[in-house]
Length: 370
Ligand code: SAH
Image (tube, rainbow, N blue to C red; front, side, top):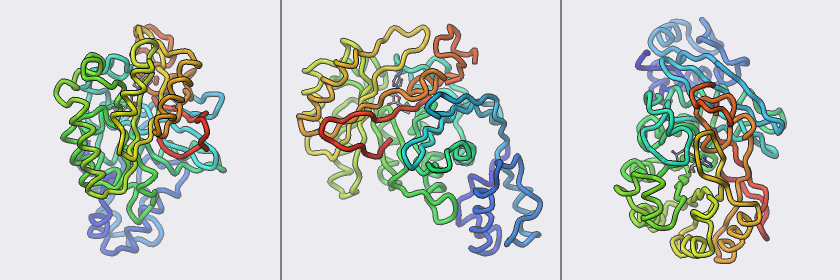
């Protein structure tokens, strides 16, 4: 694998290599305007000196990629299995009203052992490079409907972004710099299972949003569900968000809360969740568990999900339910494990990730967010 790739070159580096800012902007725009996505960089591109471009192509090619599988659900959610050098990951395009969201993977597999997540069953292959993360956005955006361009990116696919924070910070910066695709930092959200050192660095160095997968309100339960909670417990995670808020970052914090029947969906859980988030500009996303073979967790009934949402909402905390998107193609949250069929017995047999959409929120309009 080349150490440098075109999609991973920071803008100032591209400017230096091509000899001017206008050439660098032209080069990046060329890539984002070329459809279908090219397998390799063209020999010449308009607006860029051929000699400088030839030198760049030789040292910073596109990351090697191949779409090994593409599946589309009835609602338009599209899951790609993308083969990279020595790794395969899943990338999901989730169409919305007026804009689509791309869910990217940050690692092939994951080292964390969350008991409810299909990706955890895969083991860990390797970290992705920044260029490979940006490439996933490039590949997924061409799947977006014309009336809903891909303007949101969530790092909620396979992997724990804060275990690969260097590449994740670089990718978030590439997606939001002044060349293409020029996303707003407000429309980029990185989700973490609570890997504190990476989370702290991310909050210091990025303007993008953070989603914390809290999933439980006590250390006793969270430690069972997410073993690394024993290293970085709930209070430490929320104190870090509070510190960032007090520093005046102006961020909202997305709190992801997967709901499991009779595990974390009681009235007492809702009350503890509200208490934990008091004073934080937090926005809770409830995710009813998405099932996969070999996993014993179950989602609560729709009534129980809505009752939990009502309690959180009445406690004064913004709260949406992310009803599954793309679960019939194993593209919903927690299903990304390179399976083709969510009911398949063997998680390695074929594709999975992360479409979830808001459907209801008592007394609140639909809002954007991860
Ligand atoms: N590792 C990161 C990002 C990937 S997971 C993180 O944990 O945040 C993205 C979201 O899917 C997380 O909020 C996670 O809690 C949730 N999730 C994992 N498994 C799930 C499942 N089986 N059903 C529903 N959501 C799940």
